[in-house]
Length: 386
Image 1 (cartoon, rainbow, N blue to C red):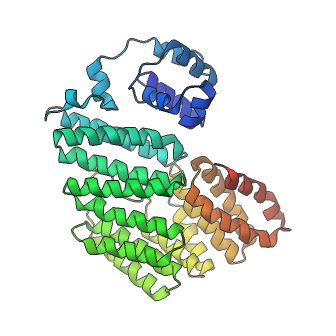
Image 2 (spheres, rainbow, N blue to C red):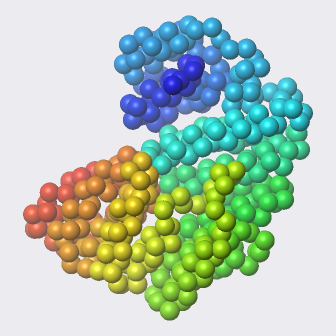
Image 3 (cartoon, helix red, strand yellow):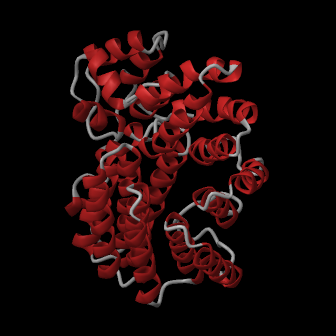
């Protein structure tokens, strides 16, 4: 339940399926101004509240929230906005800031599972800058670590938005913050993220090298090293080396078995799907040309992905449909594609569109097929969506 105008505005905007930029254009205010309103950095003026209420069909709810008593300055500063570093330095404020900062981050991560990356990028950047500024002023390693984790996820969302340059910058910034915090996990995982960028560029050698560097750094936990070996396996598959692929997956499985259970004390790095290794194996089997085997494995694993994890369902669903098509199973490819497209349209991912483009070319070989005729308009609409 929203407690203030900014939270209510965000909820209404997301429910309407609008990005921050889209709503800003509709109400004729800048996206930066809208971001400050949603994050509690500025109070809304009456004209702005009325415009948003009309555009979002809020029935006066937003106008009422805008006229509610304003929170105290202390409440605004502490409740996740973290403005005014000087007022919040000191050990007494850090535990509360850490909890609120993490809660805000995990809320944005939850939205990132099911929405366009552009809907969460600006709030993520704002949050990262505030947490990072307070961490540097206060000297808190815990806040610095959280700032690094937020930066890493911001890099991932930048990649999903198709902005590789900023994806790389945020990823490397996360590594710098991680090292400053004395935490090797994110510094190691940053190489895994860079390897992911290379994977989508179809650069097998770079994918392998970066994933191996992550494993050579040392000191990272077993789960992070397992994700690095997983990425290395995907690089070997892209290069067509089945033996090296299987060896890397075996190493990843051993590491994952040794990884301690997540205690929930810190936002988890990497995929949170039930079995990230098996999903990646299905992905890699497709790259190795073992398409029927890939489709069968992905059919089983996608059924285990929660419905709210639309980004993961779209990503691996697109790869599953591609595997079916490459195996000549056109009807099954189109059947499974329907669900994947519904998720893909909602999450608006540049990386998922990479696989969908390849799938469109593959299905084009059966352009006279009834099932292809039926699904192709939806596929084209997702591919041209930006």
